[in-house]
Image 1 (tube, rainbow, N blue to C red):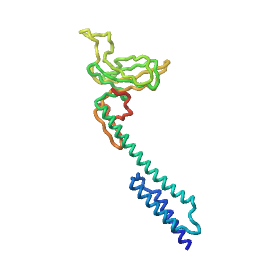
Image 2: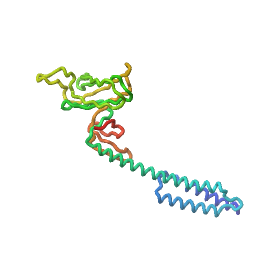
Image 3: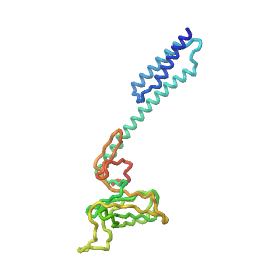
Image 4: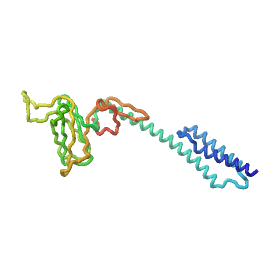
Length: 239
């Protein structure tokens, strides 16, 4: 008779463990948590009723099973809270991103568009430099056409406006400085400190934000007119 009671109690204990450790990996809703709690209490009461009177469950076992209920319930509530915070963050990021539509940004890139003798580019320095130069290259010829000397710079982002004039001393027939043709040019950053070339200087390309997309999988993306999708973290400076 005692053996039968022990088998029943053992079966209920297994059911308790299964109830507290479900195989499916999903986040429970409030209703799921309530149902799981009711099932746990029903199984626990059944276990207590069917335990061997000569070998009853000790306080440690009962406390352990109640602790399992508390832990699982707490984890489920924490998961729900995290999901809510994640959703709120994504909504906030999307709202912030939409405010950037129509604005110019600097992101990693080594091209500069000259239009109407105007162009914008930049450099990001992770450490101070004694001397910083931007060397501009004509894609059509592959030759360097101008070097812009920025002098010494502190660490940070340095935006640069370019007028397309390689040599101000050279004039056209009207006495105006000769400018380079409009188009896309390349450029590279040469930064030194103490005569040593720095490896933490990054070229920054100017582009404009035309739209924003947001999804649970990819998060919030800024769609740039030339460079395509970029994240908010890719933006080094906004104009």
